Length: 272
Image (cartoon, rainbow, N blue to C red; front, top):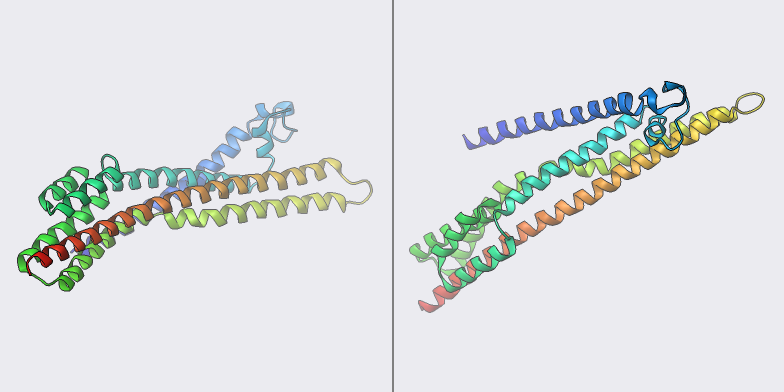
């Protein structure tokens, strides 16, 4: 039953992710067509004219049909970054995570497991849930009187199982952010190539080169390059930031697990 729920939840999450991706692309197209391509941004009141001096919306519009794709990728980075920030912040639980870890480790070291469990119930979040599972298992192995190695293996296994349930939620959509790092650069490069093709096409025309077409081609290439770099840069920053946050959470769980195991070993040592 749990596997069925997990698979159905994963399938629903994939559908939602797909809707977000398509939605971002559509919004990018609408922004490019109706906001950047608004005639008020151009000389003569039509988007086929030259951009008004200093009007950056019109300049970006002239980047060509790759621009809405890049805008969609940029919006995806923003949307999934906000989503990851909300989820990872919730996973850290209520209050300061470092203070929580110090209090829990202090209670565990003193052998006050009930206080540590109460702190986990108060903190909530993925870290607290994993540590609570390990503490409950600690009490079980303590009642059973297992030797140190068997207890350590049992507690570590419980932590691994609890962590494996929490990690998919933490790492969800991280693949999308990492993909956008490369996709932004490649889409920008594609726009750069198409712009340079137009520029060289203007140079290759018979007679005097079409200076306007040459300038438009170079402008299109540079606009796509800049937009692609901006998208990739934001995606890299977001991906590394959230990866660091996830590593901190998993390290906190492992650190608490080692403290629990060491506490049990000390307890067994006093029984001999």
